[in-house]
Length: 367
Image 1: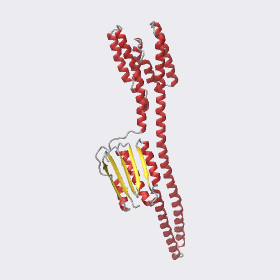
Image 2: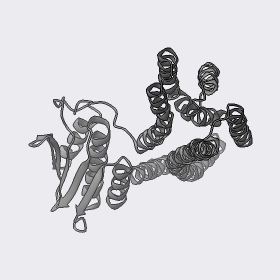
Image 3: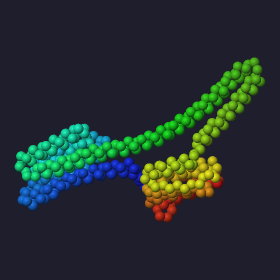
Image 4: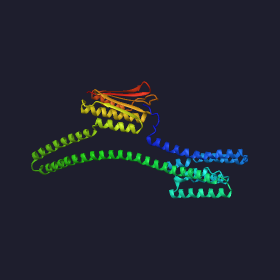
């Protein structure tokens, strides 16, 4: 199947959810437009109202950037925070205070929590003092609303940033566990080979040394010892091949469980129905390889949302949706290589598009 673009991971979707929910907080500054409209209806100068509206629009557009930068782990966007801070101060002079909570929320990811809380308290105190100096009649109700919005913006950004860090650490933990499992398996294999070859090579070395000692005085005895060394080397070779073969053998039940977990972690609903009790070990290994290769294709070359895996009478059918592009030839080291292995064992492999934008992988082995 041809690559149709990288499928969004679960971590990507969590990031989008957190970022877009933070953008909703920015919409609170939109109350400033309503405030300016009501003032204009009450006779507020058109130039001031229009200029304040443009500044407010620029503020809201720029305010979408800081949290995205914080999520990516980038440096503090000093220029953006400075420009939005100047706009906030200018609007506050006109007593358009709706941008203050949003600006404090934008600053929160880049300062300590204590600093953010102190700045929030200071801003509310300054608004109260400024409103009292202007002898505004509704200072107390405005202060209560502004305090609620400030708490919503600041605490909301803190909570969203904390949720993102937890989600990212969980994702990195899953990847670390996968790498650890692979490393442990490699260490186990290296340990088995070390035990096997160490003992065999030591015996071969001792036999060769014994033959070398008796060669001058008793060539026939040296020849007999070398024949034993040869036999021991052949036995060691057979043992190494058996160890490698056992290492390469796949457990079909474990592969099915692993593939299902991997697909569901990638938001692909996966249903498995497998009858494998009557299969020979070789057939189970071949089908396990087919399942693993099919799962790789689903993740790499489709935008699947659903995948079904059935095994019955030695026949595997793996079907997934999300195929919209033309299907190319199988890669030599992928399905084509697997097809050769199956054919050599008396089985068959077929793969191709199915009706409804689906893709079907069908492998049959001797039952």
